[in-house]
Length: 426
Image: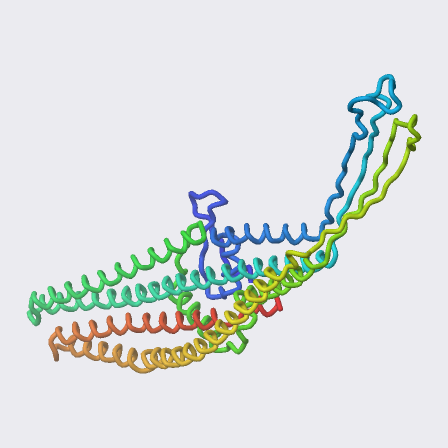
């Protein structure tokens, strides 16, 4: 799929300023790969993913033990026995200890929660990438439609120029009037204005594409490539049969639900006290009183979860899980309803496009050809040819618009269902 994205280096640009050139082979997954490398929105989401991944790794790291030291039995006032010389060097004791808190029932839920949050962040990045890829597809569709419009209008301009040549020849032979030539010139100028307007639309779409990818976007190489690009997406949309449950935004909700369940388990584990075990060594200098010079000590401290047993946190986690489950259900219901409506819209717009291609446009071209022959034979006035060409110009624009409408509906339909990459991620 990577070969579908052509990178072309402009003559005066550096190698790192390569431009993006759309081709008919581009699909949603390929655009997603392009966006993942170039989109600043995706990069911003990746920061959250990096933080979540780091947190997941940290959740599996054991806590550090604690080291403590003591200086005790510091003499204050008379010593026992009395009159003890150098009491500050002969009485105090010195101790050192290491303590460690053992988590009971908490490390597993904590790790599962962190993993689920990382999965949710990863799915959100995929959802952002997908949304950006869909937006890029819409822009490329606008570029393709503008390319088709310009191509059709330029062909019509060439035909109008031939008509002007014919009118000028008729004028020279006395069978025409200067008014006929003027009308044809005005009509050609009108068509050129339409072509320039669509070229402007093409450049605006290319500018929006460049802003999204941070690099120059070239137009389609030809109108045939633009038409093939639109047709390919329509065929893909017609084959959509996959469920929306594997979409990245749905997977993000599923991972968030797993995180809340793990959070509820962690809250329940709050009722289990975490013992802290300490091992210490004592060096006692006050042996004159019968103390042991070297000794070890072992202690265990256990917190008493009498006031906070994690109930509030558990209830909050369960409430969030319920909300996430409801949000997931609503999202899937909306997707199912939208897919049905989009299928009907796609079928209707496809029939409109096919009617234009198979019937209306061929008839309009045939009428123009017949009228041009009749005008050349001086059987009808040139105003009839002008009107027929104007109708053909409007139909060419309608055809490009119909292609664009079908494409935009196809993109929306593809956006509602998971891509092949989403199915692989199952």
